[in-house]
Length: 191
Ligand code: IMP
Ligand code: MG
Image 1 (cartoon, rainbow, N blue to C red):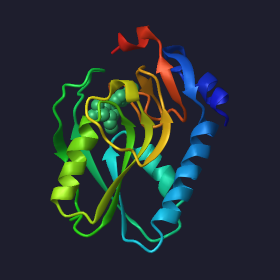
Image 2 (spheres, protein in one colour):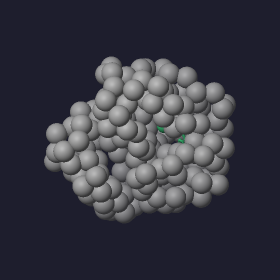
Image 3 (cartoon, helix red, strand yellow):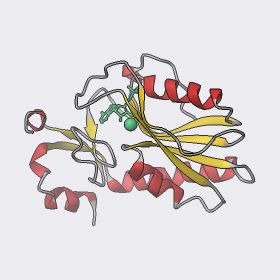
């Protein structure tokens, strides 16, 4: 089903102002990023660390393009709660299961906004002895950056608007949309 069909079919269609990135654009970019990872990590001990919950969709699509042996693990961090403004504090809600010692880690993230989450996570991974750490993020909002982080594998820069879909939520909703969209202001008011 194309993005426009999904857009028409969803009961949330009325909440969406416009589609920023279509399903096709996203899938094409995911394949491109995966091709770079395949080349860069051939013969290495690759561990993909997905940041829950937002990166679940991206990680699932990305890893299916990676034909080499790899492992995955997940971490859940909190910096937002149910608001669209970051509190500036990062805490671990669910830690990694694996020791990252010696692994070539690629952190898979939905969006880098202020950069605080990635800054915190990178420090943790280095402290725990990861062999190397790089970031693979689907989206970045460079205009919102408070902490400078290098995104080695980036899908798209987005403007300073709150986006949902393809894993990204507002108050835990909209993660299952196959595209990335901007909500109408009214959608922020409904429970
Ligand atoms: P940080 O500000 O870079 O630490 O980003 C923290 C987290 O905020 C991201 O991993 C997302 O889960 C969330 N976030 C930031 N911007 C958006 C957005 O536009 N939509 C949905 N979630 C967002
Ligand atoms: Mg996130």
